[in-house]
Image 1 (cartoon, rainbow, N blue to C red):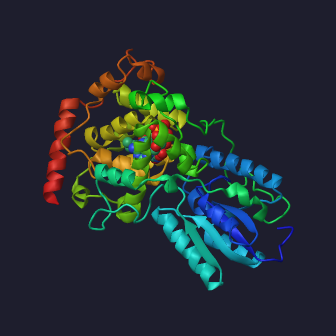
Image 2: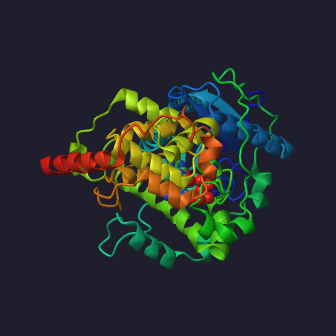
Image 3: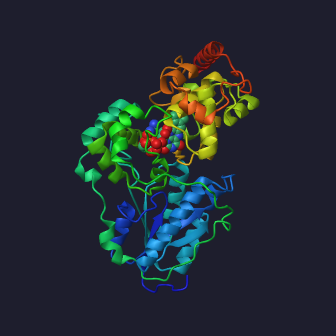
Amino acid sequence: MTLPPTEPVVLFWYRRDLRLHDNAGLYHALRSGQPVLPVFIFDQTILETLDDRNDRRVNFIYQTIQALQEAFTKLGTSLIVRAGKPLEVYRKLLNELPIRAVYTNYDYEVYAKERDQAVADLLRENGVAFHAYKDQTLFDRDEILTGNGSPYTVFTPYSRRWLDKLNHVYLQSYPTEAYVRNFLTINPQPIPTLEALGFQPSKASFPAKTVADRLLAHYKESRDFPAQPGTSELGIHLRFGTISIRELARQAHQQSATFLNELIWRDFYFQVLDHFPHVEKRAFRPAYDHIRWRNHEGEFQRWCEGQTGYPIVDAGMRQLNETGWMHNRVRMITASFLCKHLLIDWRWGEAYFARKLRDYDLAANNGGWQWAAGSGTDAAPYFRVFNPTLQAQKFDPQSDYIRRWVPEFQSLSYPQPMVDHPMARNRAIEVYKKGLAAA
Ligand code: FAD
């Protein structure tokens, strides 16, 4: 830092809340009475897990950080951007700056909770306070509990309670803009290049940050049809906090109960992960850990590449591979196919989606996969197995979606179905039955 401040500062630590406006933790930092310096850390622990040098998420974060830096420069302050392991970065920052406190927003993933605990401990040892706020959900932690005080494990009663509790206070924005004069005045500080972080710029473009009123007006009827542009594609913005959940929920509350319901699913899966952290590695229902998966490597490869011979499954996987996004209906179909038709461990599919999805979010991805495997909260009974052909007839009746991603699907060059549906269905039911009986 070229201009080490002599007066005490508070830091605002950006993570998955990459915006200036309506940001709970930033708002509280700006009102703390000390000048505020915003900080972002490219977390080496996470970057090391990514194998694609053009990773879309890293590119998205990088572009967002650059845009934030421009905004901060206009305000006469600067984002401090570092790369490394957060604990190490904080050790250095403590030496460089007279830090009074660190403000941030809650994160519910196991790794993130451990990281925050370690940083909070280090700060406390150095006499520095650590404050975290709810920002990425409407309700979190123990705000929505059953009558006997336990977390909900079934979505419908959770959503009823959630809607009962919702009022304008929870939907209100934090007026961060009103306090921007409380940033520390400082020259713009350099940002490490993408190359220095080990990545390359990608050509990926990203969806808009807004959802059109027109889309919300038709969301209920069109959201299940993958050939239509019927969903918002806001996932990546919600993942990295480039939009505010409160603003979006306000719009949904006025315009589409069905869309609001999807935001409730999002909260639901965050609270499942927060209260039942074992889901990250194991089945929500322990009995499902006894299923004897076939885990055939070659079959997994065909699924990944979109070469299963089931056009709707292949269309979904190719859309994912090419764009980093897959329609929700098709996520359900491809996930069910992997777990039930191929009897491959849901964690393999979960990990593949985690590598590829630009809107990858541990809580929702894990929830979606455990739902498909039947092992999660709210899952359909295991003997209900999606029929991919019927799903395609129902949700892609003119085969428009399939044609877009699998143009050769009616030609001789297209593979035969890699498994016969009735055989696979019976096999899945047998294997599940045995596994559950062994539990
Ligand atoms: P829209 O239909 O426009 O919905 C708006 C927002 O609501 C989404 O961006 C998302 O934040 C939230 N939302 C919608 N549906 C769900 C849901 N079922 N659960 C939780 N939140 C939801 N969603 C992710 O955000 N990240 C994931 O990694 C992810 N993995 C999934 C894996 C599987 C196997 C399945 C079945 C679902 C997964 N989902 C995931 C949920 C859902 O498919 C996506 O949120 C949705 O398709 C994203 O597209 P969209 O932004 O156009 O959604």
